[in-house]
Length: 264
Length: 302
Image 1 (cartoon, each protein chain N blue to C red):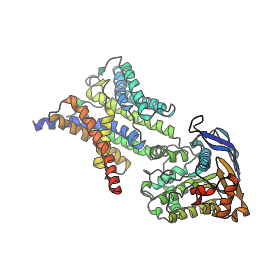
Image 2: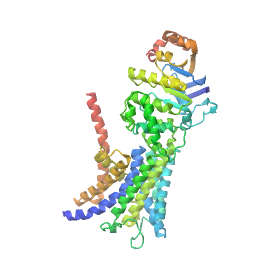
Image 3: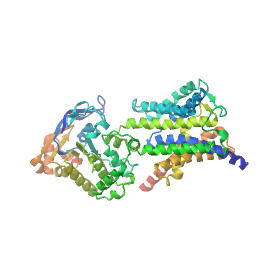
Image 4: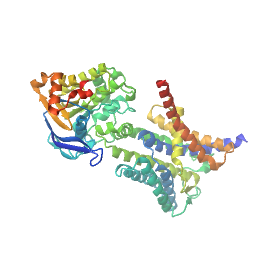
């Protein structure tokens, strides 16, 4: 369960660059909810994920995950609850380290790191099997540096790392936006598969309306730092891109055609 | 020019190179593993010697003095780490601040004298330049090979551990590290402490080797350390992939550096110009990857 209570964040307060990024966001997610998030540039989607992840502290409000108030915690202390995949494929992995070393780092998320081996023998076999499920041939390259992988391979690996220790909340922040369409589709399908298999509570930001409708059981739309639309269940299944665009226009009072990003 | 004089100077160059190789391994850990330029080492490169020599002059056992020297270096690293992480001072400036304060501290340790001698005849020293041409275990080259091998073995073991992997991850990608629950600030502090502990060990050994500690002993040390790292990257970068081999390469880099210096001096360069030469060489080698990158980019755009 995730509860966001009246989150507020203003960047550069009292300056000419002042920007209200989160303007009182409240949201409740049940276990197993797979929420897709859409909205124009600067609507607050990524900002919301960063607020939950603790990249910076919110000005006010509360973030409660499974009854634990994580609002004041620093980023690395929240990590045990959270699995994250970023837009930039370079961000989620350590390029100068081996594939298995990256997985082993993720395996120890939330544990004390001491003088035990960085990667155990048993883990090697475990990861080889796990990598084989991706169907990318990575199981034969486990000691290669991650820097040698393509963007799509890195995102698939990051996804694996994010879900290796079943997180309470998986956050996918436009994680296929930097990939070519075919690879993007592959990574999306893989994400959906992992989420379903592990029954993960998930928030996925996307700029693609079709994907937002196709995946998940719930869809929220953000605008100006607020959640302006929250559709779930049957209603979501029957959504069309056209209907969504009309909803946006109605809810935000703006013409959507001005926002190229939403049309992609 | 007499080639004989060069050859007879080589054992000394190799011994010095091996001692500075230990220092360069310390620099490698911050510069390459943690991706951070730590200028504390210019100060620590005198602190270790100061602590070791003063303790021994006051009757301490060699090994106790060495351990205390390492601990002093680690404290210096801790201070830089706190300046950087808890006080938000950029890493380079944090190192400079510690380095500057170490100048006073080093003088204080040395009883407010600029140098202190320790004679190998009266004290049991691990390495001494007097034995550089001796045959047997008292030869500093032999001792330094063992010290270097032990150091590399310990570091190889440590960086294969969970905490060592966390340190490497911090240097590779802070963003990812935080997302995987790694306390990157703590990792940076630990890395700086280890690095400066190693540099202080090198300092203590170097003071013993030359039979004296000098408050200016570490001046420009970072440049020598970087030179060793760069020489090793250029010469062995394509062959040494294993972490232990990379550390060995850094040590060899320092030896090569000292041999080259010896040759340049033999060719008749004024000793006072050495630091200028070192700085220029390091600057050029640092620029090479940048220029290469620019060339590659230019080719792409064309």
